[in-house]
Amino acid sequence: MSIEKKFRKLDDITHVLQRPSMYIGSIKPHTSKKYILVDGKMCPLELTYNPGLLKIFDEIITNSVDEHKREGSKLDTIKVNIRGGKFEVWDNGGIPVVKHKEEDQWIPEMIFSNLKAGSNFDDTEDRTWAGTNGVGSSLTNIFSKEFTISTCDGKNSFFQVFSNNMRDKTNPTIKRNKNNHTCITFTPDYEKFGLDGLNEANTDLIKKRVYDIAGCNPTLKIYLDDVLINIKSFEDYIKFYREDYFFETNKDKTWSLGIAHSQEGFQQISFANTTETYDGGNHVDYILSQIISQLREFFQKKHKVDVKPSELKNHIQIFLCSTVINPGFSSQTKEKLITEVKDFGFTFEVSEKLIKSILKSEIVNSVLDWIQQKKSADENKLARELNKNLSKIKVEKLIDAKGKDRWKCSLALFEGDSASSAFRKYRDPQSQGAFSLRGKFINAMEITNQKLVGNNEVVNLMGALGLKLGQKVVPGTLRYGKILFYCDADHDGSSIVGLLINFLFKYWPELFENPMVYKAETPIVVSKNNKTKKKISFYTQEDYNNWMNSVNTKEWEIEYKKGLGALVDDEYKEIINNPRLTQITSDEMSKGSLNIWFGKDPELRKSELLSNNIE
Image 1 (cartoon, rainbow, N blue to C red):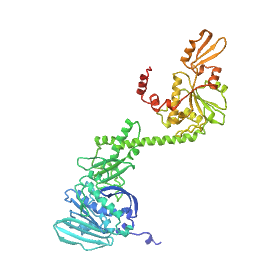
Image 2: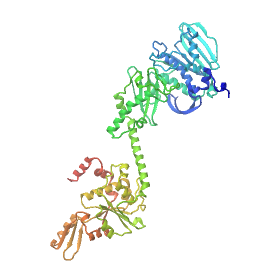
Image 3: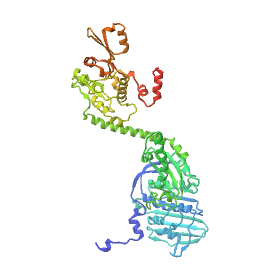
Image 4: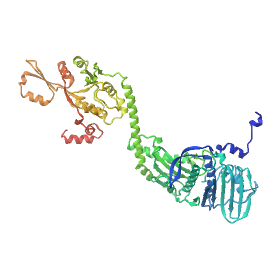
């Protein structure tokens, strides 16, 4: 390859046409969800459109909007007509019809046919319009088969036609004219965009852009195809999207804000100096940071949960019309504002009133729902992991039954290790197993799965029984057919039994619908006849009192049993081989009663104690 072919110098027009993405973005079909106007409402639809084509239209209409914003401008009307693939943008402002002395070129021709010409190069000027680089209008000319300039400045009129992608032009026609207007008419070179002509999707998005401009500039009268767009404020514009929203604007209306609940993740419709910032930017972050910091504090204080900013953001839709001095964008396509907050030239403080409205809105409710769903999802994940590992663990403190017919087997739950040796001595190894509890069992009423699976005793008990979180118990599928509670006949023992019932009933209430859960009674008094050596065990104080009144107590040795640890071998043998069992059924409890005794609210327990005269 020759040096001349390897290294080339392109003229401006050729460079723009060969590298369009550098100037107007992609000229290839792009499919995504975009808002368009349908029956008077903005509706999100999946459309295939051409971003570059939309950009060259936007460059022309933005010129008119920018001129309206200049100090002293009398431009207050813009008319857009779209006919047969041809665009016409008219405004009642005129471009000076004079020759530039240094360039020896008429001003209208210079600004519409040169990539580096315009009125936005004074960096000492505080600009509140969108144009910055002076290339936009000429880009539209380059991408058009025909581009016509018609303008009057109150003294003279100017008319000129460009064609063939700005390579050809007519000589300007200058006439005396006292009117003021500018009309730019152009027919895009659709072949350059891979199109046969102006299709419906691109037309809808261009019309939507005209509505955007009307919403951001309520002092402008904007016509679309000879019909006035009746938008008097940015709030009117929001109403095309939502009926339920919160709105506020600052005193000089340089910033206007709408906030609504989003069910589809974070959504934003934002503008900086009328330019739609599809990708948001620092102006959107500036507002969101104020709102999210308040929301985060609210959830921390009231609901004791730290919600990440990104998670809160997912429940918000924001509508923002902002004004920024000398705006900077991420690219020529101006999809993201990159001006630093300190350089905005304006401030906007989200009011306390708006924050209070948000805190009472569906936004907060949806965050709470999400928190609960996430909590459930996390707990379900933990449950799945636990269930997967249960079959692999070696259960501590388990004396396992050896029989194959597991439904015939019973598992005795004891307080501590004191009964282990006696149980091993007198049990039937084929049908009887035992598990030793370590003191007071966990209160499962308000506990999370995360804390539950972190409790070794709970995990071991589940492993011993074959229970799995989130899985309903089917009779005959557990490792044991009966669960027997062996606890001391005192307040501590009753408390442990209650906590075990609470745990099992919370996660597997069906256990209590079948004859599976029992309390094994333990003697509180044992009487031994000194002569006959006969022993009698009493399980209630009432039974003992009745018996005592019917015998000569001098013939008997009376011993009060202070728990299982006080039993001797033959007494253990009796409660292991011939236990007195009381079945615990679902009819004897409810979630409500368990909540009274094991829930968070102490007032419920106080009321229950008072109603039963218990001190």
